[in-house]
Amino acid sequence: MDIFAIQLVNGLSYGFLLFIITCGLSLTFGIMGVLNLAHGSLYMVGAYLALTVTRDIAPSFWAALVIAPILVAVISLIIEFVLLRPTYRLGHLSQVLMTFGLAYIIHDVVRMIWGASIQSLNMPPELSGSVELFGQVFPVYRLAVVGFGLAVAVVLWLLQEKTRWGAIIRAGLTNKEMVSGLGINIKLVFSVVFAIGGLLAGIGGVAAGPVLGLYPSMEFEVLILALVILVVGGLGSIAGTLLASLLVGILDTFGRVMFPEISLIIIFGIMAVVLIVKPTGLLGKQVH
Amino acid sequence: MNATLRRIGLAILLIALCAVPYLVSAYGLSIMTEILIFSVFALSLNILVGYTGLVSLGHAAYFGVGAYTASLVAIHFSNNLFLTLICALIISAIVAFIIGFFCSRVSGFYFLMLTLAFSQMIYGLVYRWGKLTGGDNGLSGVPRPALLGDLLIRTPVQIYYLIFVVFAIVLLVLNILLRSPLGQIFVGIRENEARVRSMGYNTTLYKNLAFVIAGALGGVAGSLYSYFNGFVSPKDVYWTLSGEALIMVLIGGAGTLIGPVLGAAFLVLLETTLSSYTDSWMLIVGATFILFVVFLPKGIVSIGPLLVRILRVPKRRPAPARSAEAQDIKAGIEQNGVGT
Image (cartoon, rainbow over all chains, first blue to last red; front, side, top):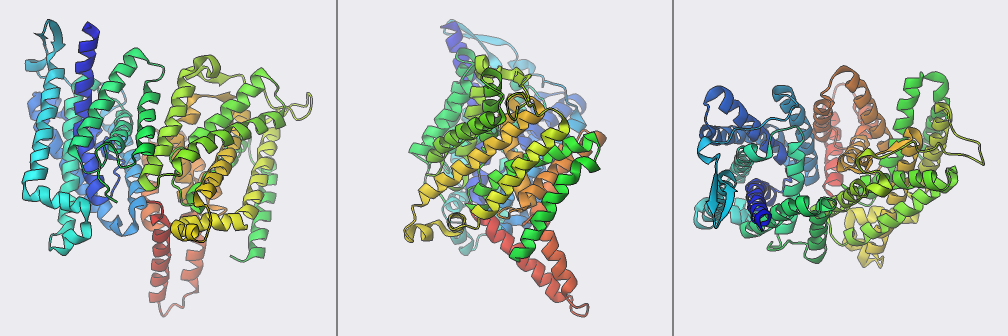
């Protein structure tokens, strides 16, 4: 029972981290039609930038949580402007391939700047202890990640459902041409959406740094899981992404402990079943 | 392209490859062997990506299944070349049939993800089924293949010729197959599946067939790799290998016969030369890849015709050259756009 409760919290916090990261991926794919295979790389850059911020600029996790994601958003904006914008006329597959190449480049650039050894981001001291709840001892940071993830989910939901920008984004998911026909600058929407995607990846990277660690190829592990969540949850639904994230996060955590032989197979098996039975995902809408 | 010209080109290529062991060093020979193995692999993926328009990111599954099957048969039963090769071919064809049965129901991005999911499941299986596959350590000490009885194919030159013969057979068979009515149906599915279906063809069946052929040849490539290395590891099933094969096909030129061979040669040469100068070959490969996507979407094969067209244009009127190039790029977009 002890182990079960702790693993459940671990799984939930992992799920919420994956949720933050996948939301950005889902947004860019849904609106721009760009399956950004460099999304995991943006997550990695966020984590490493946080490392630099806490070491050299402001020795505080909170400063890093603000500065690093903004820097990642700026980087994504540059990527969108320089690399993606000229390729919108080339078709979706070309963009996917381009971001694949970009992921390769970022992988090596990060390794050159920060080295190949495993590093870790320091937890904020306020959250580094553990707390007793219902007679169980839990690490505070994991609980904080759960709360933070919930907050992000609520904020995203509010942004998407209650604001003008959210309305444009929802409309863009359904019909891009119609949106630009209504006089909305779709290029600007693309840039903003890509920057938001980068911001979310960066936030995910900083939040994951203290628990998952920083190492080369961390981005591909997360990217694969994020793609799985994208498929399982379905496009254009924050609730679907959240459900799938928690499912994958918990399954992965329990799978590693209880059936280490087949944890990977379980997750991909679920994705295969969902794709075959309901190709639009658990809660997704028909988008394309 | 002119049919006679194509035949002459193929003949020259094969004769040149025949002479390779007399022209290059031992190191060069091992690189050439690797190029031929990955050419077979990329050629098999090209049946799906280039001809049928199914962008698969799970082709390493068949490579790995072929490599492990050939090695396990060689270790436990017999190292007869034909036996191991045919077992690898049959088992990977069966695996491809099962995977294709499910994957041909979805398309575009979902197809890509489903092929990835299946190949990663096979990777998980290989990685964890330690008793059979050796787990993380892989299978080492795979016996060399025997031609007949005890006649072993042992030296690097012999291995090269073995792989060359298989490569030549695959290339020639594909040359016939892809221009046959069957190949034309594949191309029809790539261009407009609904129309082909309305003409009365069961496109799902043909997509399954493309899967089985591609998977079986992918398995052959895997078994060749196990002869060459004498060693297989879970790395040979990992999805990065699928990604590399996809890069080879696209850089070389999807939907052309010789494109994947050029792509495989380009990527293997790039990686081997770069890895002796620098650690960051991923950076260079990634940058090269982006340059190809932007400036040469049809791949290496389009360089020749592009140059010819540019040179043929009279000097006084440079404008048509540009439009010819633009048309070329546009054609590439149309081709690349399919499947998403």
